[in-house]
Image (cartoon, rainbow, N blue to C red; front, side, top):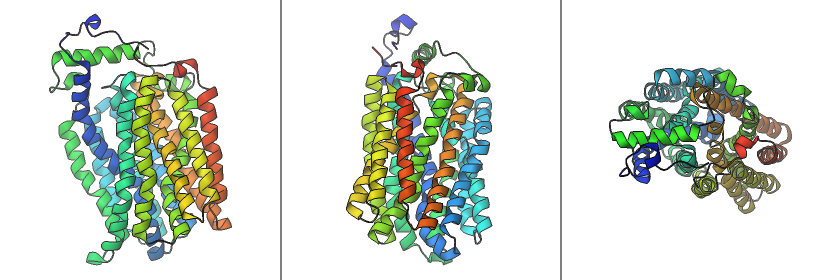
Length: 440
């Protein structure tokens, strides 16, 4: 795809394209990344709370896996309605609502004493957070054309890697140093640390976000014209879709299937990575937290590199496939060396390099299929399909471990599913998705 020169689109020559998008990125991305960091931390803190929570409350691995998965059930049920509401009322108010409500629900985890409390609150947290990630992804399509989405989406998901890098040792520190302080267990402090800051972030979203480019008083008229023209040119030929029209688009359900398979791998790392490390090393909670950060460091590096390479190439499916293959090899290695900490860590770092970076690369695909309300609802629906992987992965691995005493068979199934995602990306997507969106 070739974007026309600014002058050809009626944009003043003095308007610098690079400076304009840099200005937008600096305005939006720092706050978006911090919000996304807390969203991802909210997902992984349950894995670090697992050891203390199970010990204090007597939950089995199956009960833990079910409770972890109920977050996704709530998320899935309310995902598409949430994004359709966002489309109608605007991202600013709706994302602020999401941040505040899920922060309160996460903080309420301090009160659980029984399994049904755990199940109910995990479901509620998922319902309150529903629509956040696809809402942000849709919001970014309103500010950045397709040719820049590899880098900008990677910036967004670097926050998830930072959540693993810093969240893992931070979680370990809270669990060990605050355990018993003010009569609260370490796992209770962990949920407070994940929930209460979201109230402030919700307030900041209200003050910093604008719903559309035309509302941005911090952009000049020529900058608004430049961005609007680029996005219009990038979306030319896609057309507006209803949600039903988006579903009927060629390749839409295949893209949803790819995301489902990738999310099985992502949740496999998020929920069971610390457990694998602890089992293989016998290390303390703090040490496990430090070691668990390493796959996310590798993922953060991979995200930045792949984001730039995929923008330069414009051929997104090949990068998704290559990253999925890397994750599959890592999962095979993790299953093979589940009792040997050094090779296990090397395998998990390969998993992080592949599966963590595959998610932002994947999200460059859906906006090439749909725009408008179809994009808002369609992105949410694809994310919903993917989130079913968050139900399958924790329950499957937990059930297999309770049954066999080993996670290896389930980890190898995850590896095979990552290879399936790679095969679909390479051989089954329509030409519209395989077409390069690189600027010539």
